Image 1 (cartoon, rainbow, N blue to C red):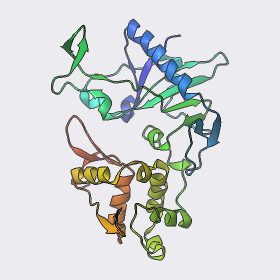
Image 2: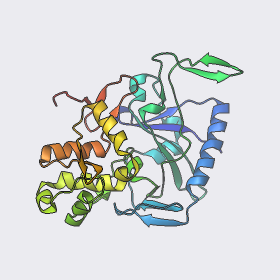
Image 3: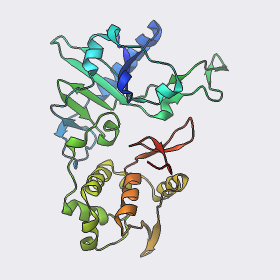
Length: 295
């Protein structure tokens, strides 16, 4: 069995495209991905995604009845009918995910997915080189790096993943997470890294948008896993308001007392910002417009 390699893009006119691979590359890719599949599937327990539970080692999340509206399975079943990738930098920036897969004897199709970001693009801007036979050679043309692990699998409507945050970079999963409740909102502002505030004053600021973002920030674990000094550095780089204060001898994030600044903080914590490694321009991912531009 040889696996083909496809890209899922944000371009509605070319939603799915196929990479034309040489036979040696396809053989190596097949072994590479099948090994990733074996590691990904090595789980003990599965838990239905509820927006709150974070899997431990050996555990995985799943969503049932996920609709393959983009037709990934059809591409795997009929790879010859898929248009080839257009090898331009602009097109590569539209890629949301790489995927491959195969049809099982029972007729079901198993889709293997990796989320894709711009750091994996090998650009023709500048000089890209690689090491071979004790010398460095120039990379001719645009390229990409295939990651070392799978983000998700999809089979018979069952979407399995370890990280909701990574998986929603590929698919619209908005209907599968719930807005934070009042108790969730209180838990959020009571995190050690956040400034102490009166929850009775904060809850009225939490409209539907704020509650969804709080739910996503809590699910991502960013406040538990990313050092405060790193958050400050990124916020400064993007020109995003991000104030910290000293509270009882500890540095904490200042919680805005108005909805506008609160939303800016939550959007930042939910990582809706990125920097294009090609243009070095800052963007808001929901609109792909440069930060500072008028919408």
